[in-house]
Length: 375
Image (cartoon, rainbow, N blue to C red; front, side, top):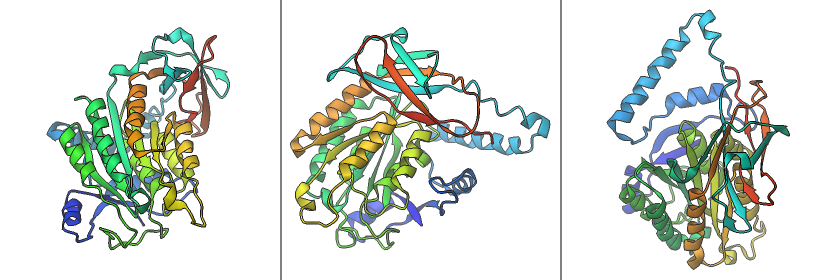
C-alpha cells in the first residue's frame, strides 16, 4: 500500500533518531483501471484524506461549507440532476513561455498567438501575462542516497528561490521522497516554515541510513519519484486554481514507486500542473552499477508533457543559476484560455499546439489535456 506521510511529529522522531513515521491517513488503494485509479476509487480515497490545508480558520470554514452542497446534490431529483453536466463552457488554460533563442519574449499580445486542439484552430478568448497571477508551488526533494553529496546545496538554493519568488498571495508546500513520500510542510506563504521544512531533510540510506522507517517500500527501492509527483498532483494540487507548479530536485532515477511514470504524468496533466526539474546528478554514484542511469529522460518526460523544463546542473554550485532561470520563466508566462470546439465529454486526451504568428520563437507549453467526463 502506497502511503503519503506527513510531519511535524515525524520531524521530531527524525531529530531524535527514532526512525519512526506515522501514516498521514492518505492511502492509495490498488488501481482498478490500468493507468488510473478510477473515479470510484478516488471518491473512496477522498473520504479517508484527513489532512487539511493550513490556510487559516476562514478557509477551513469554506472547506466545511463546500462539503455540504455535495450531500445535497446527491438528493437532487433526476430532472434537476440532468442539468449539471454543463461543461461546454469550461475554459482550457494553457500557460506558455516564449523565447527568442534563450531570451524570454515578454511583449506579445493575444493576436500574436495561434492555438490548435487536435489540429483544429481554437479562439483564444482569455489572455493575460502571468507576472502578477497567484502561484501555487510544490518543492519535491529527492533524499535518497544518490543525492547525499548534493543535498546541502539543493537545500540552500531552494530556500533562496522561495525568498525570491514566493509573494504573500502565493502558497507553497514542501515534501521529500526516498523510500516513502513525506509531506514536511503543508500549504503556507510563511517563508520561515518552508525554510524549516527544507532544513529538516536528511538522506535516507534505504534502511541503513539516518531514518530507515518501519514500513517496507512496495517496490523495494529507495527513490519513489513517481509516487511523489502523483500524490502532489492528485491530492494537493488538483483542487487548486491558477498557476500550479512542481519543482523537482532529483537526478530523475525512480527505483521503487508503486505508480508508473505514465500514471504520474497523467495525474499532472489532469491537475493542470507544470513540472520543472533541477537535475543534479552525482555520476560517480552510478558508475559500475549494472542498471545504468536514465533519470534525465524521465525528468524530460515530465517537463515536455506539462510545459515545464529540465535544467541540468553539472556542478552543485551552479544550482543557483538553475533556480534563477525557473524564477524568470514564472515571471514571463502567458496565459491563453479557450473553450474547446469539441463539446464531447468523453475523457479523451486532446493535443494542444501553440504558435506565435510569423515568428520562429520557441514555445514552452503543455502538450495536451484530458477532456471532462460526464458523471
